[in-house]
Length: 546
Image (cartoon, rainbow, N blue to C red; front, top):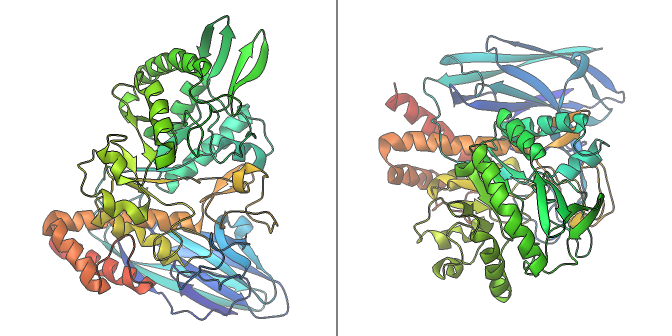
């Protein structure tokens, strides 16, 4: 069998030739999570059972294996894949991404297929003492054995705490479908805890909170499973609200590491034309009182909002999260929908004094016009917002941009995902948003699909909709989740160096190593750039903080 240690940048398919440069050593700071991989090729005609044993003095290391994900669509536009993709245009197949625990100390490798072990030093949760550590993984199978050793050089410095907000939209209905469980049963709450902990592991500290069923990626006229946290009853003209599930949600999220809460959008996507689904009990029977059948500015919905938001605000204040709570109107208003967006915003703002209203918004002229003072532009347009004196600078990406920019599709090389870190630093970004933490549906939520299996549906690029995977009674992490976490750690390492050298000097250092001016639309298309600048930064930190 061929066995090779590799970075997190390579993408491994089942039957590819393992022709990579060996990755045997690197450095990290004392409180940094660090990961590398061991790729194994079974070139025999028989399935192999391989026993895996870890040997190291570093007591925060574990080994998982990477489960394969079927990629039936590499990019959003099938014709636009470039050197950032491990797949050629139109190619499909299996790529390893989900991180599974190794059961009974063994992994199974099919004949003429590859397997990948994922080795992680969790110094972010258990900081290490500075020094060099050998991490040895011993492999034994019926007719052979091997050992692979990686040397991790732990630098005597710590990543600084950073004010940063990070959210991937959290989809409760995906959890219900993936685990065949009704919402808000006791088992469902346990599943929620597993997914919230997984969110924290990928670096998230903000969570989309379904005070009502979020009106996201829902076909016009259709609906998604009701996941409304606030129970509503109407008697005559008066609404009564029960917030116990919301309080439980917030307490659980805080226990799992969430600090910030974004309330579900209060109007539909694609122009804010209609109301979100709201289930209300009337005469003892639950009814879908609002939804696509009710216009956004209908007096009945305005009356609902006028009664709902004041009571919600009081509960938020009682929970002590008012300074960390955000509201949404609707995504990406356009010129043709701007008047409607402003009407909808006016309906809620009178009740939300002191709260931030944030939306994906990539038109800088809307900031100039006072439409929003808390915009979230897409990465490729972020440079157009640097002229504004914003309270916090955010950015996002989703199914685009899909070329010459950071993203997290399964078929993209890992360095595409991790390149985000240096870009966040250069633009002093303080918040990042993505629409899909655990979205396991086809486009417009028409069908639930397993993220592991081949399907024939019109779907998003694999990996766009989720960064964690369902597994037994909870969520498991992914290679791409670690890459996103690495990007956030990279930003913090650059911040630490900038404390000594200044931000301009560190920006110049990055550009010099890159041989170009790095921004959200330009960066070297290779993993060596990241390894080179991160190694250089670590050594400078070692010198300056000795």
